[in-house]
Length: 75
Image (cartoon, rainbow, N blue to C red):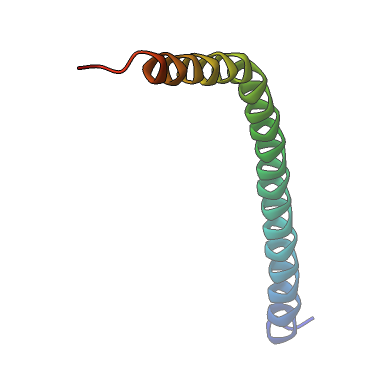
């Protein structure tokens, strides 16, 4: 083989390797992002479960304060 015919073949091999590596990197990034999104969803659900009793207690306290304010008007 002459050097002139080796260059295009070598360039094609290098291009193929670059494309495969790019796909592997993009796949790893996508996998990481999907995993992070799943973890974030679980964390948000856990936060909502933790905050729900406090929010209900706060609403009950606000309702009791409003009822108390209506019973005894301030001067």
